[in-house]
Length: 571
Image (tube, rainbow, N blue to C red; front, side):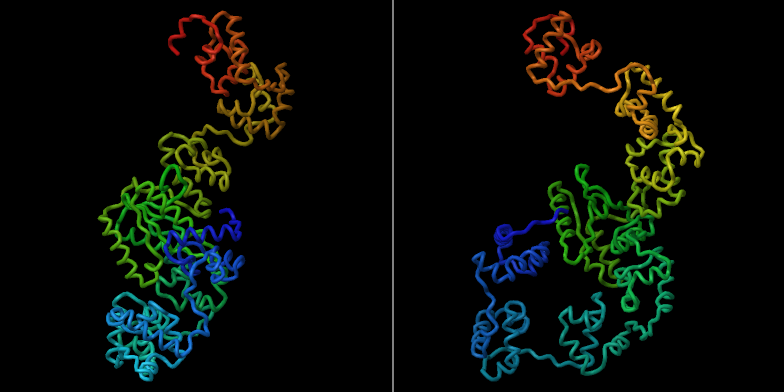
């Protein structure tokens, strides 16, 4: 992705466009949320210092008040005005919820002057304050409801859900661990983590999943304690080295697919568990290189879970893919990251609910839906896997397929893997005891190379170039000439008397080509075809006509000649 070149004019133009498009003032949080992270975190602070200066340059109203404006008198007046304006919202929820939702600075100012309760009693504002009497039974009931809704019970998670009062009330009675035991939520005993204890817990996970787990997978499995212990004791790379395992860039699923994130791996395993046929990393369109994460039936599925700090490249790419789906009128579903930030049974339930909405039922996976997906280098380094992937093509051709045939069949990955890990296609054929059209690297000696090149040049009546050798399927001979001599030395060694250097004729203009064609036709007293021009030694004229896009009909009409021939009517 090319690096953006920011300046003041470009930033102002883009912000004006976004302001009209979104119909609201662009703030830092809004820009980051909608995929403009670099603009918010880098460009605007560099050229405008802050968003206040940006809004002044755009001529937008600044609704944020200075800190010294929230005096006691102004705060009370603002509270009275707010209660009159938003009475219905306050009655539907509460005064606290309404202020946090509609005017958060007002709540901060009220707390600075003693809180809503004190201001309400002192200035007789008439604000209906709702108080909740917390009992032990009420706390247990609320915790059970949160747990049954699929949320993890932790202090941090309760605060995220807005249960501040519940967290405060628990502190008055007992700690969170005691309440979890009473509800029946399993609680792990506090452990003194050591390197050996972490390795002991990691080994069964590696054996089960086939790779070194990352922090996301450990959180999905509910092993927050293990993830936190690894981070505190040196990080994931350290324990990957101790266990002689590498943290994978591709995650193997149970059905043999390799996925690009642990979230995709979990989703793939759910599909495999319930026998839902699916394909991975499928091109959205033949004209575009973008690939979806999953294809179920005719529905494309994207797992949106990748986050990189200080970069919005992923958000921009996802936005382009969404525009492509809409342009091609294809059905798509985007599964957000929050689906995978919960217990495993709830992830599975949510995934099945999404699939059921598509109207897709589970069935036995078909062989026709099995295709080669992205594979890690370690997969292709094994000769058994190369043999397995080549089996359908060997059955089709009855021999070792050529590299060209592998590319035509869409198996370019296998061709590259053969050269990278297993030598050449000829060597692979020898190991599999198959016939092969390729030859070994030692087949072309210096004498054999000159002999074969001399023979083919005598048959063609000229020294052939590398491009011409490729056209007659003699790539091995061309490579041998380049390896040993080069074409110029090889031609001198053949001693055939043909011109060693090809003479490039001067490129003729449109008018010169017509004039030369006229002279040639007058000489032979008839109109000549392309084939006849080449046979009679006028190949440069024939090539020039082609390069200028001139057909023989046009050349004959513009030549001013009126020869009548038997083939003129067939043009």
